[in-house]
Length: 61
Image 1 (cartoon, rainbow, N blue to C red):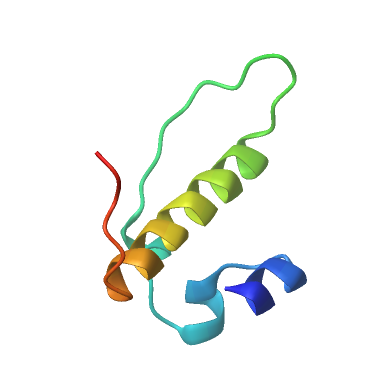
Image 2 (image 1 turned 90 degrees about the horizontal axis):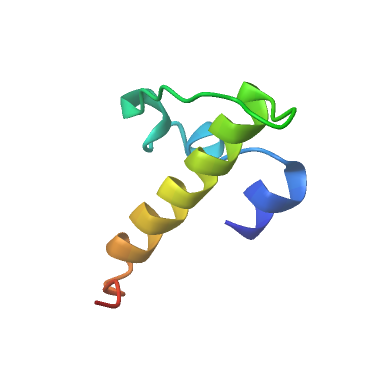
């Protein structure tokens, strides 16, 4: 995760597997937000969630 973050990419791009291929998102950009930046932020959160699940770290209720 640290290498992906430092290089500005996703974990799935480095490992060849992950959530990116399964993610379809639709959003409305407002306040000058760019869709690419919004998708990147969403993928980062989903990658982190998947990583924590793989490590056996549960989500807090």
